[in-house]
Amino acid sequence: MKEKACISILVLTITILAVSGISCLRVEAQTGSASINNYFPTDFPTAQVFLNPTSYPYSSNTVSYVLEGQAAPLYVHLNYYAGAGNLNQAVTIEASCAAFVSTVNQTLAVTQNQVFTFTLTPTIKSGIDGTYNINFIANDEMSDQIGQTSTSINVWSTPHVEASNLLYTAASLTYSYPYGLSIIYDKYQSPQAKANQTLATIEFASAMTSFNNKDWNGTETHAQNSINLVKAADASETASDLQGGTTYLVRLITYPIVILAVLMLVYMIVVIYRKIYPSTNKPNES
Image 1 (tube, rainbow, N blue to C red):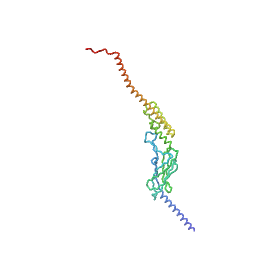
Image 2 (cartoon, rainbow, N blue to C red):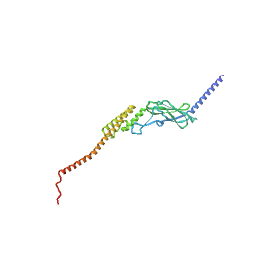
Image 3 (cartoon, rainbow, N blue to C red):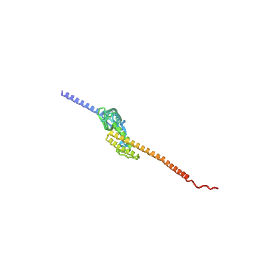
Image 4 (spheres, one colour):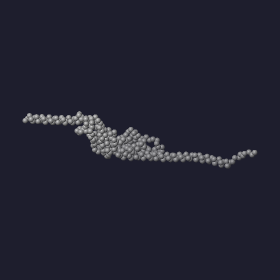
């Protein structure tokens, strides 16, 4: 009786060990690894590239961003390295970020040593602005993690974009350089135009300060003031040029008239003199 009980226990133990071994072998055979690659803004087709308004006119200095409240498709590239005995695998990539409305994922059948591109389409939250990290995790069909990576993205709010556009316009008009430093060119000659240009440069410096402090409303206000002052300077210079041109034209017309009047006066004096003092010399009579 005891022998039968011992044999039963032994058989049960062997069975449990065998099943456990097979299970371990199956998981080991299906578990592989993967490398994940994602780069901003290269892998974000809706990312917008904007010339940094604080570095005008250097076109090499650009800022890339995705807009708040918009769908932002992104590409994730995965290279799968299979576990022993399994070259094919169903892999799920999940992307999570504080800037996303919700976590997004996609599952693809992948093959050993081939690069597969996953397309995820998160929606960016509204009312946010700043730099955010995206975390990527790759899981195999057994839900085992086989790879992970992260990247950072720039999210701009709509006021941020509008302020940047207006600031860039102001920079191009005031010939301004990074951090509010500017060079006053001899573009204007009239005193009023020069005064307006100086005020425009001061307003632009204030706009730059507001922009660096992320005060978008202040940026727009000062940038618009700068633009208006440049336009006023142009108007003053035009009026001055018109007045100067009119004066020159008047002078151009006046000088010949004065000369002609002087000549006429001389002629009249000569005629009158001859009438008053006629010539006493008469020709000899033959």
